[in-house]
Amino acid sequence: MVDFEDTVEAIVIESGNILYAGNRQEAESYIESTDKIIDLQGATVFPGFVDNHVHLVWLGEKLDRLDLSGIQSRQAVLEAIEKKVKTLQPGEWLIAEGFNDNQWDDTRIIDRLELDAISTKHPIVLTRVCRHALVANQLAITLAGITRETPTPIGGYIGKDDSGRLTGYFKDTAQELIKRSEPEKDVAYLKRMIGLSIDHLVSKGLVGGDTEDLSYFGPESYKKVTAAFKAHIQENRTPFKTHALVHHDVLTDYLSDPSKSQALSYYTFGAMKIFVDGAFGGRTAWLNAPYSDDDTTSGLYIHEEAELEALIKTARKHHLALAAHTIGDRAIETLVKLLKQYPSTSSLPDRVIHASLVSDKAIGLMQDVPIVLDVQPLFVSSDFPWIIDRVGEKRARQLYRFNTLTQSGIPILGSSDGPIEDVSPLKGIAAFVNRRPIYDEKSYTKEEALTVYQAIESYTKKSAIATHTEATRGQIKTGYAADFTILAANPFHVNTDDLADIAVDMTIIDGNIVYRHPAL
Image 1 (cartoon, rainbow, N blue to C red):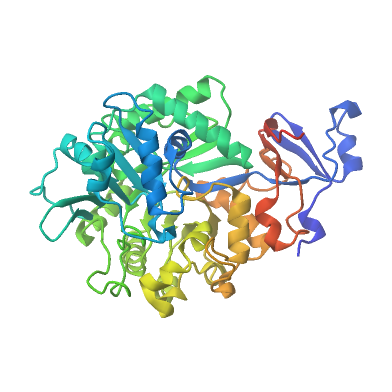
Image 2 (cartoon, rainbow, N blue to C red):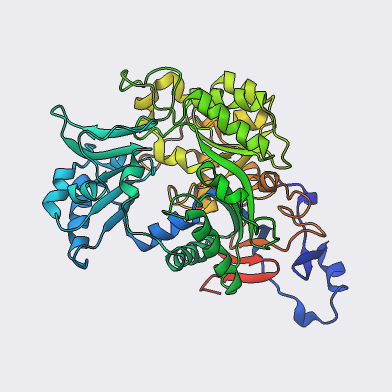
């Protein structure tokens, strides 16, 4: 339930901030003439929604490329690739996004020989939905200089059959062996991807996002990506409050950047990003015990523990918070023990990104460390029920423990990990509340559901904790930023089954309408 104190009738905006929030009659006294009043006629206004973990450039690429995420069969994926190849220029790369073998009847990973049968003249790369694995054809492998003898990097996997033949399947850090040979992405390309992404995000009611893009785009990636974001802003394109995490691979570039401390309204820097483990889909999330459907592995750690400790010490040396990708229970426990050993001196909290399989031990450890959790409610929709086979019934009770974590006093921040999941915060809210997968109508571990209020708070008020902007963002209060998400229906008054279908009427950033529903 929402108390009366949690609502206001009217808002007065001045210079991008809220001058007054309260009853309509008093609001009108601030305004010289009524023609300055916008009557929303029953629409519902919330503080602007923020996606607390997203990849803006990758999202733009998914919007721009062949998208495989909605294709329901292995054969249909191959047919889509064959059709796309026919549209390419000679030698042009085909990079497709988001295949999801968990939703196929035949869940065998596509082999490079099947891609070679489609084309030996075009390098082909298929990125898995989790972005922790890809499949490449022989031409892409050859261009990358990979052979049977290529050593597997720590934290990675190179697929081979029983004879030692390369299957074209690369996981986690081994993916970089392929990606390094992809066509270079210049500032103009990156700026276009950012523009596509931001236009899409504001249409979903998002006013900002905490993004991680700086290290993935070839030589001088940091320089190119920051230049692309700044060019987007300077050209007065759609504004979006972007908070950038700094991958440890580009930390030196960041530290030597003289412009990093120059105030930009729509682009700020945050914590140092590291990866502790992989993902469930490829069985690379790092677990305390072997996978239930493959007892030969407990997953992968991306860094040896001594190296992980050194990375954390480096962040602390430069007074940076940590933002760490951690999915498996062992990954979370290992990370949080180190965070406790090396406490942050930053004004920003440390972030545990994903926190998917959370043991009781991990919860106890997290209560002793000032952290926030960037979680993805739509992982519940994507992962159940197949994930029960991965980790077993008992451990499945410890997946996506949003309510338990909230009751333990650990801030839960809503996010999409876009393009991994749909960036719509309404779909995220629905997943928080209903815990219903896309594969069936059953609600899984319903006791871990959040209320509608808690779910919305994770995209609004709690979002400000991660960026240390609690005094200026995330609430509709005097002095706060005039960032609003305006919905066609009140989420507290609709059936929870209908939450995901609520339309976004408007998105407002600093008092300016950046998106208006076409029907308006």
